[in-house]
Image 1: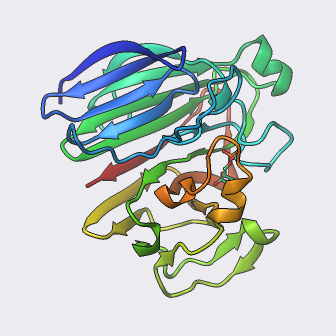
Image 2: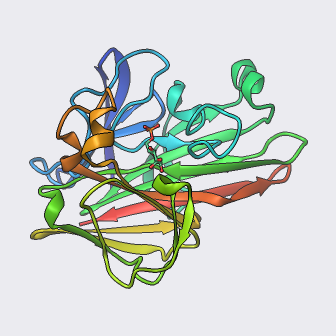
Amino acid sequence: MTLAIESFVRDDRPCIRLRAADGASAEVSLHGAHVLSWKPAPDRERLYLSPNASRAAGSAIRGGIPVIFPQFAGHGPLVKHGFARLLEWRFAGIEPSGADGMEAATFELTDSEYTRSLWPSRFVARLQVALAPSRLIVGLSVHNPGDAPFAFTAALHTYLRVGRLAQVDLSGLESTPYEDSARKSVAMPATGTPVRFDGELDHIYPAAPCELTLHDGEQTLRIASEGFRDAVIWSPGATLAASIGDLGAGEHLRFVCVEAATVVEPVTLDPGERWVGVQRLQE
Ligand SMILES: O=P(O)(O)OC[C@H]1O[C@H](O)[C@H](O)[C@@H](O)[C@@H]1O
């Protein structure tokens, strides 16, 4: 689908809006190459963005699709969820997407003196955002242009907007055992039932199926991933949400995070190698 591109400023940060001929749109902040909005139709927002999202330099945006790289959560020595979501990415224009050749808005982050002071590796990370009828396709690629191997973990930490959390369920993970990050990463057996959200939930599903479905009353969203081995499902629940400054009371009822992730086994890239992970959202 041919994309029209316009730039705008939101919360003092440069952003790019993509519009498709069928009326679909998406917005991406260069801060973190963070997808802020996806509307498959002009009156239908499918991502959650916190009204209290921080505008401070060097802080992460709460909601949308944070790009987690080169470290998921506290799985390593770096700042939580790595530095990619905290830095300014470059808009590289419209390019064919590496995943399926569609036109995609392309954003790039490369190593700098600053990143090498935190993490010594040379890297080129690219985020590609494409629109198709009823679909958002987000691809993260990581290339090693250096002369030494490196390992990383990563995720697309997608905040999906929901109507009534109490009636939401997520199917596809019924047969997958998980690690419960809210309870010291204890290993849990498969539940045999769809995931429901009635309190804090923070699960890592290693080697998860790549097709999940979110049911929210009449609305359904299919969430497919490729390249990412794991799935992470997060809902903070009322108590944790109340302690998250950029969320606000009751806001946990408006979203669930369904994350395409590669956490349990880090990806290792030899010099010259490239890794690609994709998440597709489809109504
Ligand atoms: O508050 P953040 O740093 O954005 O992290 C938000 C959440 O991200 C992931 O889903 C992790 O599994 C959670 O443990 C974490 O709390």
